[in-house]
Image (tube, rainbow over all chains, first blue to last red; front, side, top):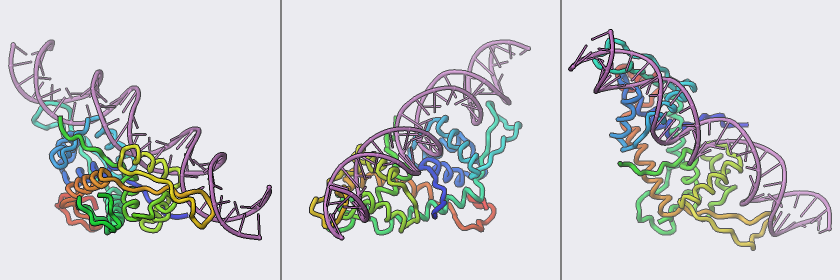
Length: 119
Length: 119
DNA sequence: TTAATATTTTCTACAATGTAGAAAATATCG
DNA sequence: CGATATTTTCTACATTGTAGAAAATATTAA
């Protein structure tokens, strides 16, 4: 057959992007606050870690426990890093979305007769 | 609290876009072939209709049975139309994705030190 | 040292979305 | 009518999204 592409879920997509952006500072709680700041998205810790773990089991990210010498209270951070495969699937996902969006108008007052006459 | 946004699932997103593009000719089987042509995505009929129905129950599309006077064999087509709400959620989804993608590099040879050093 | 507090992750459950294929419906044509 | 063509409906299950309590583990105060 054809098309053996892997698809990123909507939230997986977002989380993976947050990890890329955070770079060296990519750990759970930080991803959470980042999503809140950037797109005002509220996510529970459970949702986040479940997704993080699934991304890891798919090989899109790897994780490593942080240094125990941090000067703060609390449990050790777990840092995540997006893998080459993770970047690949991000690229593919973006590409497909771009193709699908091609020519689709978004203005609230879409002109009649256009292929996008929903409004 | 905040952020009462509705999120489109990955496939819902794609299907909604296909419907917009197909315009007057947006019915199940056609969406299927369109997805295959545009992004080489194989979808079973079951997957497609399940999603179409969910989109309708959320108010993102409406549907209407086609004319019985079609000059061909087979069952009547069911045409779908994206609603104003459907367009709204598409816009919102795209906006969030654009924010998340901002500044994220995708070239396979990403330069070291950049926030995107996965490759 | 022990308790209080702070920070982050793990665990457990369930809801929503994605996926598939057989079956049903319904039209034309020989 | 029976064969064939086209499209949708139905039934089931896998994967992803969601949440919050509990656990782990560090610092600081008593």
